[in-house]
Image (cartoon, rainbow, N blue to C red; front, side):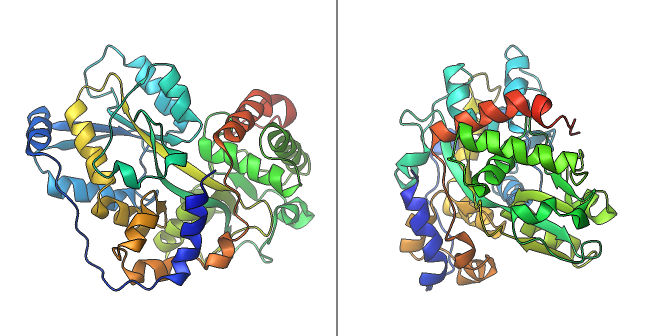
Length: 368
């Protein structure tokens, strides 16, 4: 699964780009005109500091100023996005999402429930087959690895692995960056902890991860608060389990106040893929398609990379010399990713079922 993505990781250090130019083929004039007539695009669950989305959205607005971007609930999780589409099936107003960006496991789920419509972007062939629906209902957009964001003002000894977090010195300090009953990021954070124990990816690792967080909670080290850069800076969640791209973006945002460290654990290095899709009930279907064209253009993919996310077209763009070396230099060393495990869709689904179904009974922490 996702062998192309494995190759991409080594390319971050092996390839020296000769060009920093960013160019891409224009969408059809008919699509652009139809999208402009609709005049609006409604997104959901896109925090501006997540994967460089602030710059992505600004770039789309600059290119298509006739289209207003209506941003719903930036802090929502993948499950919230699914529910938002269900709740607004018959609503053509501003509360109905046109597009979603969800965890890998949610793509097939939404397709099966009839919540997505198919669309293949012009750069479709450069999206690895392992992370896209053959019929175009959902398609991988970017990936990263699970990491620890650490407030160095409050944490004297930076944890290096999952097992360290169980130590008494980390009492009341460890949080997940979402509710593990709904947030893909948090659900996979549990999977990563389970993998670190040696459990097989999927249901076994999910159950092992639940046991780990149960122990963490029993020890008094787990904080049932959704961790963000703000809660970390305030001291409410000194250590937050989150995707590396979110952690690195938070480090930039905090700018040394407080000083932070981003750690990829020594074991249980989990890589996670997110996917895009267009709502089957999108009030602005042409604007949604134009948004997808922008996201999968060289410009959109490069903007995600600037936000520390490895975009889906990373391999193809690398081979074509389209990625500025300055962006590659800002990424963590390739060695941090050498042990990264890319779970299959079946493993992700099995883990999701295990975690969402038993978090309350096994861990018993109401994360909010």
